[in-house]
Image 1: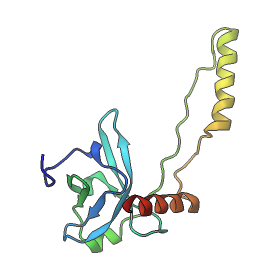
Image 2 (image 1 turned 120 degrees about the horizontal axis):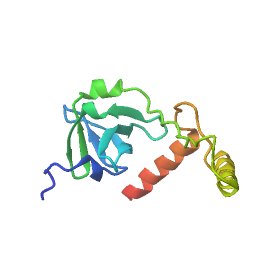
Image 3 (image 1 turned 90 degrees about the vertical axis):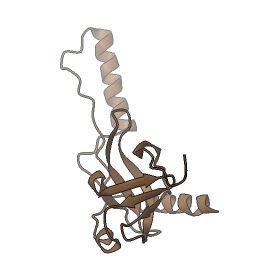
Length: 145
């Protein structure tokens, strides 16, 4: 397989170059959005600057994917108008009211407390905070070296 041969979206990695349809480099892949278990590709979060908020390109706007490079179906000017990437809200596991016997009830209660403490459910999408953007920038900077 050559460098210009198309590859699956499942191979896209953070830091891959993102190029517009007119050949201009738009940025780098910040995050791949999708469900690899069910082979559902939603799109990409694209880092266009060091500390700027990533932009979101839905899968319909993604063209050819080759090793290390993702080609958009947009010109550089259109890519600059992409909306901000909003991280998806976390999901919650819904358990029935009737949790079975005492052991099941205690186990369910422990899972409820654990979920609230370790992985609280967010009710809406949110933008990336400053610390996460700094971490992504450092990761991209030192990966290139």
